[in-house]
Image (tube, rainbow, N blue to C red; front, side, top):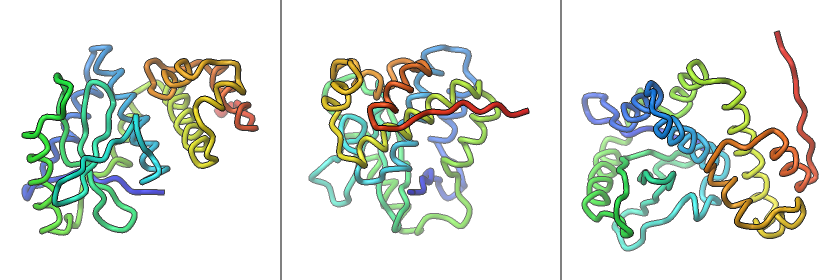
Length: 209
C-alpha cells in the first residue's frame, strides 16, 4: 500500500487539493465524472505503486528526476516517488495537444525540487483526507462501485492477467474491457460480478443500518 501526498508550498497551499474541491462541489456532470476518474486512478496508484503502467500512468523520461504522469482524460497529473512508499502529487493541467506541454513539465519539476529541498512538510494534505470529503459528499453506492472496480483491476494486474485474457474469460472484447478500466462510465454491479468471476472471485452485497 502506498501513501499519496499533495504538494504544498511554504504557506501550506495545495493547488491540487483546491482543484479537487472545485470538482467535488461542482454541479457540472463532466467535472464530477473527471473526479471519479481521478479517484479511480489514485486508488490504483495507492494499491499498485510502480506496477501501475499505461494507459493510467506514463513515465516521462530524460529529466533530472523521475517524473510520472497520471492520465484521467482530459487531465494530466504529474507526480513523483519521494520517500520509501510515498508519492507526491505535484501539479495538473488540461491537455489540449498530442504532446505533453514542456512548460507544465518544468513547473512540476520545480515543485519537486522545492519539495525535496524541504523534505515534505510536517503536516501535509493527503489523498486519504480528501477521500473522506468525497465519501461524505457523493453517493456511497457509486463510490463503492468505483472502489470495487479499482480493487479488481489491481488484482488483475497482480495476477499478471492481461486485458485480452480476462475479456475472453468473461465474454467481452478487449476494447470493451479497456473502456471499463478507464472508467469511461461507472459500471453496473452485474459488470463487476462478471469481472470478479473472471478472476475466480465473488462479490457479496452487505446491508448495514
